[in-house]
Every structure is written in structure tokens, then in C-alpha cells.
Image (cartoon, rainbow, N blue to C red):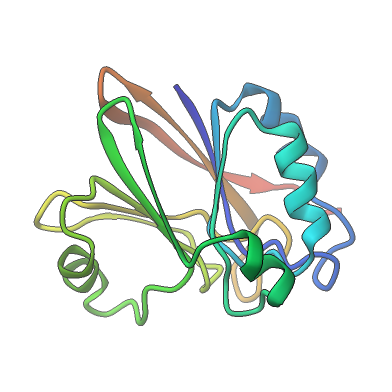
Length: 166
């Protein structure tokens, strides 16, 4: 099962559209995760129309229209793995311990907010993934998103992708 992870698209404020490279990934993904800060409902509409399955949450920059359609936290099970998606997890220091306590029973937590890619594992085994932002790199050298694969009930091939500058 192929996964595509993104967050913090901030359209149309930070970019006018999603990068073509990211859009080209959509048909290959069985499940697409978006960890909030969409900003516009058009991006949600676009992903809903092009994705086989979309798991999304709202972020701190998302207004009433998005909050009416998306949860603050989303839970899903894929091939026996328990996923959670949330926008914000707090400061980097202590994140693994804090998230493991807040989300017991999860195997993977997809999050956003910082625009900083993150891939760590808590002592409990919880995998924490932040794909960064495909449209707003902030202080990062590149805009980014992630892909991953689930094989035999295990998360494999987690890869961070750099988005070429336009």
C-alpha cells in the first residue's frame, strides 16, 4: 500500500497551486494524508476528487469552512497499523515522549505545523512523521513531502522528497 503525506499547503497564500510533482504522485497513492493548514477549501476539494482515500485534519490557520469538514485528529487503520493525524504536537524537545503518552496504541503519527520534516521513533515504538510543506519551506532549504509503503503490516520505504524550486 502506497502512502503520500503532506501538510501546511497554505494555498493560495504561500503558493498559487500544489506543485506538479506532488500532484503527479496522487494517482499512485492508495492513501493521502494531509496534516492541516490547508487554508482554502479548494485544496480539500481537489484532493477529495483525485485521491482514492484522503485522511485529513484541520490546522491552526484553517477557518470555519475547513473545520466543518475535517476533524482536529483523525484515526485510521491500514493493513493492521494504527495511524493518527494531527496538526500540532508542540515543541520538538520531548515530542516523542509527549506524543507516545497522548496517543497510546498508535503505530504512526502524522503531523505538521512546523514545516520542518521529522522522522523519529518514540521509545514505545510510535513512529512520528512530519512531511514538511510542499509549498512553504520557511527556514528549510527545500519544500518537501513524504511517501511511504505498508508491506505486510509494516511501514517501509519512508522517503522525504524535495520539491524543485520554480
